[in-house]
Structures are given as structure tokens and as C-alpha cells.
Image (cartoon, rainbow, N blue to C red):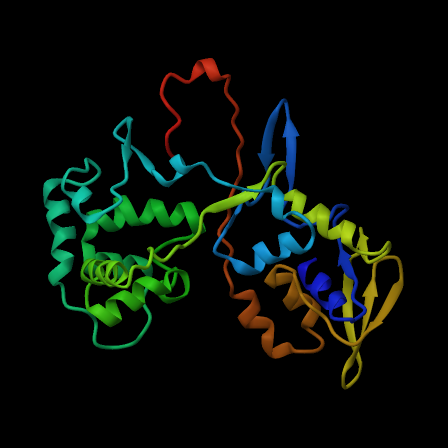
Length: 304
């Protein structure tokens, strides 16, 4: 949808072929019994300029809502209780998430030598090497799983958290790097570098989908229209074979499909991409929405 929106604003004729009977893919917001339920993603980071710009362009600039300030406080459920995640190196001294030995091992990160080679490594290997096994398994694993839903033993550090790799490369230590950068920011009277706040809209992310669809002329977004195969008809032209024995000639294609489906559609055109596309793993995730009457909550909702 966003690609078609930008292409059409640039003066090109673009359409969206959507196999489902609603637009937006995994983005789907729904009101159920007074609750706003997100069936897929529940927000975007405000530091993602492209998303913010798109929302403003389709008239939703005034409807963006940042997560409550309390959401910056993170909690883990351990030993039958909520434990607050330490938000700074000093807070590591008192956290109950790690044992005394685990806390001391994290503080030792300051003097652990940085890697000399430039090869990539998994997030787990990085955390284990720099902060020890307790921090890797009790802090890093649940926090990363909450973001990516994947296995930190196979997720690439450089791809998922390039800033951490950069801190070690530049300063040799994460703690040293954060302290030096903080001093520089104070000296240069700059605020901290923002990674953005989780942001959405009053009626959920579907507002952005609906606004995009409304911005198109009728017929631009074709629902219930799946591409079954693609045929190259000349050097820069393709014929899309659609459901219902229909075909559509195009000059270019933007794929927004899962990689297995992309591989299937490209098998007659780019067979060399079959294995690389099919080898990409998707982390399975189930979204469960729970709603409670306010009277059933006997503690402040002061975190995430």
C-alpha cells in the first residue's frame, strides 16, 4: 500500500493486488466489547521517519498517539512476581532478576576486551561474551523475544541491534561507550539520541491502512485478487496470471508477500532465488488479547 501510494504520487500508474478480502496484511485492528484489539503489530517507533511522514501525508498527523510514559518501565515475571528491568548500569546493583554473581558479571563488561575481527555473531553469543550467561538468558533473551519473537541464538546482532555492535567496535565496551556518549551529549548540550516511542492511532494501526486505501482512486486496491503465476513477456515486462483466468500486463512488480510465496511466483523467472528465499525462517507467533474489568486490577498499571 505504501509503495503504491508513493509510486502514484510520483506520477506512475500502480495498483495493489491483495489475495485477502481486506487490505493491510497482518495489520488488523478491531473493537471488541469496548476493547481495542490488535491482531498483528500494535504500533511503530516514532523514530521511523518514513512511517511518520506517510501518516502525515494521508492526513493522520493529528491522530498519532505515543505510548504512555509509564510504558518505558519494563517488567519481567520471575519467581511468581513482577521484577522491574534495570534501566541503567547502577540499577543492576539492586535488581532481583540476577544473582549477586550475575550482577557482578554484568558490571565486569566494562573491562571485557572487545572483538578484534569484524565477523557477525548471534545476539546470544554477544550477550554471553560481554555480560555472562545469567544476563543473556534472564535479561537479553526475554527482551529480544518481546521485540522479534525469534531465537537469540540464531538472530544476527548486526542486523537486529547494529548500535550495540557499533558501541563495542568504537569503545570496546557497551558500558564505557554509553558513558562516553552521554558525556559528549552533555558537553555538546545535545539531548540523548532517541530510538523513538511506540506510537499508534486512536483506533489502532488499521487507521493507517484505511487512510491509504481511501487516498486511492476506486479500483486501485483489488481485494480477493491473488497472483497465481508470473510470465516474462519481454525484457522489462511481465504478465501476471490472476485468479479467475484474468491476466494483467505490468512494467514492474513490488513483492509484499511471504518469502515462500515470493519463491513460488519467481520459480519460472529467477530459479536461483528459490533456495535463498525458502531458507528464510519465520518465527511463529500467536496473538492473544485479554481484557479485564478495572476493578480486578489491584496494582498500578505503571509499566510494560
